[in-house]
Length: 320
Image (cartoon, rainbow, N blue to C red; front, side):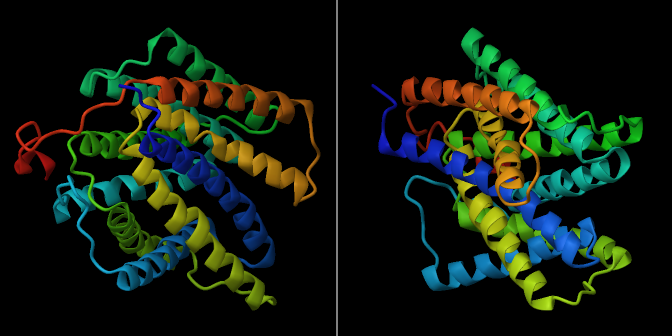
């Protein structure tokens, strides 16, 4: 049986769109920092809080909907995913603060696929094979060239530690989504995303309050529109697509596809923010997109997996 099903194709497309949308968050954040004194923790808080408002509105309009073949995860399971999401976000910003954007990004996004590949291999028995390993190595090389090619960035041990912690949170979130998806227990992606940003909102509020919750700006309208964009596109929309795709695609493949994020950010920086197009940006982008394309083709050719029957699903206690 071939895996060229509409559902498989949609899952891969969802991940590509989510990764591209994540990349726009950096450009929006840069514009916000230029237009106001909003700090990264406060921005992350408003991103989560605004995303929660958007998602609750969508859920209210859509109404509750049972997904055939899926077990509803417990509140504890949803909170667990939310805590991993919050760890991923908060530790990343701490890494950027300690060791800079370039090093923090490379370590976080570079370590993520490695941790995920190992976790998927030993936890779920998913093997990448030689072609997959080659694609992962190529993607990581492209990431390093793309982000570090400008020569910027200072390696500081504390910042690297925060970045590795962020990568662990991201890996845990991805592996958990895949593990639940394999058992038909992923639930509604919109609900999972809403819980995740709700947990993030609660956890980030005290940190954002210390940093400074309200922006001081002479251009309040622009700041508000940018906050609405960050909450809607790279948060509510992107994470809903991410949780949908991550439940159906191999975990290591998910992590490499999401490396489209820095490519998207680089393209926006060159086209809209006036940054110079360098050889490193071109080479890194080509390497990354080639690796991502190779894994997408490999994933699309994989035999379709059979959805788990109720007898084969993990007991409810294992999902809590």
